[in-house]
Structures are given as C-alpha cells and as structure tokens.
Length: 100
Length: 175
Image (tube, rainbow over all chains, first blue to last red; front, side, top):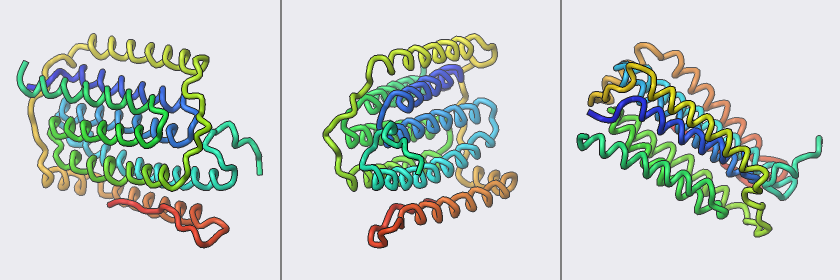
C-alpha cells in the first residue's frame, strides 16, 4: 500500500509548476532548458504513477519515449545554445535579436 | 500509513526540495548538481511504483547522460560574472502567481475526483515483462524513436561542427 494516486498527481503537478516557473523566469538559456527537463520529468512521474494505478504497462512505455525525446531535445538544444553563444557571446535570450 | 507510504512522502519531499533549490541557484554548476539529486529521487519513486527498469534508465540517461551533457557545456563555456539579475520581481511574481493557481486547481481536482483516493497497490513489472510488452505492442514506435535519435545525432554534429573545423561538439546519444 503506497499513497493514493491523487497525491502522486499532486507531486507531479508541483514539479511541473516548478519547471515552468524556472523556464519562464530565468534569463539564461541553460536554465531554460533545465526547466523543460524538469517538466518532462514531472510528466514521467505522472505516467508511471498512472501505469501503477491502472495496472497497465502502456504508461511505462510512454516514459521510455519521454526519455528518448528528452535526450534528443537536450543534445540538439545544447548544440544550438553553444552555437548561439559562439556567435553572440551571451546566454541571455534577450541578446539574440538579430535576424541574420 | 505503511512503510512504503512514508517512503513515498519522504522521497517526494526530497525531490521537490532539491528541485526548488536547483531552480533558484545563481551558479549553474550548483543548479545542475542539485538537479542530479532530484533525478536520483525520481528514480527511487519509479522503483517504488514498480518500474525497476525505468528507475535504472532514469539514473543512466537522466542523471547520467543528460546532466553530464549540461555539466560539459557549463564547464566548457566560461561563466561571465556579469550576473543575470536572477528573478526580477516584475517577472517572477506573475509567474509564481499563475503557477500557484494551476497547482491549487490541479491538486483540488485530483483530491476531489472519486476513484483516485484508494491507496495504490504494490506491483512490480519485471524488466522481462516490460520488454515483452514494449516489443509486442509498440515496436513501431521504438523504430520511430531510434530514427529520431539518429536525426538528433546528425543535427547536433552539424551544428557543432560550425565554420571552425577544430572544435568538436557534443553530439552523443543514448541507447
């Protein structure tokens, strides 16, 4: 007997809100990507909890896909960040305002 | 409350606390290390929910590969001390307000919905069961994901190569 499923959802919701908060307020590209990672992670927690609640393995399968998408997004995102840093010398998204 | 229930609340508190500390750090290195702590806690949650294989993946891919990639980038690029003004109040007050509204509404809905308040049973999906299920019903999606990883690898290599050919860049994948 673990906690009820609603508490799992609440934990995942709090984590998701923390990630969204990080992605919205920080003015540093790396912290924004970190916030997106936190949100993906919160979704994974909700999926695994739902998988246990419904006694169905599809939820765990989706977490596998979330892991793959997170890895993809981070590698490409960080490559773009490093590229942008080389061009402008800054991590602040407000500095990327030249359309060329 | 049983032992597993206590463990759940303990790990959840640790995960939320570590994440909250991580997103407020000014030093990127500290933020990444706190987030690694948070992902270890998430892996323990997965194990508690009966997904040992996913717990291992969480440690290997999230806490291992992804966070090490972040650490590489943070260490590779010199940190400019001209600090971003972390959290200008005009930005974070509205953001926190909307986040809190969503959290409260979602929590109220989750707690009020009937059928969600029965305690979860302890079940474990062994890696064999999980793998059989994945490759029996979702084999095509696995192929699509592998294609996605390949495309990401090519894209990261292409972006990282740049004009100056001497600087190699991160383009590594997992699985």
